[in-house]
Image (cartoon, rainbow, N blue to C red; front, side, top):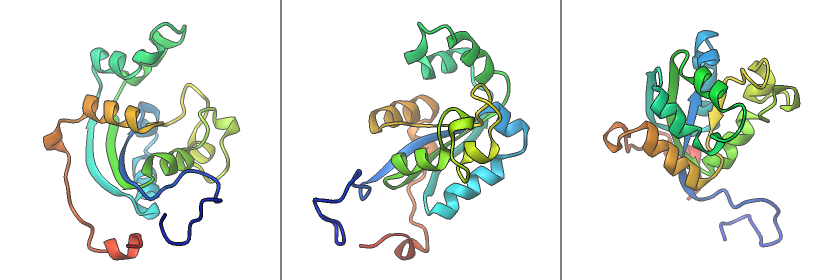
Length: 166
């Protein structure tokens, strides 16, 4: 167990270095929120290892949202995500998946806490600005779908010793 943490502590162990896929959706790009959102992840102390802007193809969108294929809103999701540019990112850090989900906030903006990206910036569930992986398996799938391995950078921030213990 990492120092300062006991078996009695609640919640997940966030000490594992991992990667998460995060995408700023077309509404976030069109509204000029890219810098604001990037800044929140940087200020949290995560490391950006992949970044690109693209308008997703239908094939990419259908693969990304494949788990929703049988749901009535699937076609609308695909139409929306392919309607304009998306900023696709891979962030790395201790517990980045769980932490990013907290930074992002609830899917429904009206249920998202103030201070979260969706709580502060999103308009409604159909225009909720951002996507973030929800589990390590999902993150691995999404990163592989949106990025080639050569598009990801392994690097060490100059201030790494100030970001994490050990």
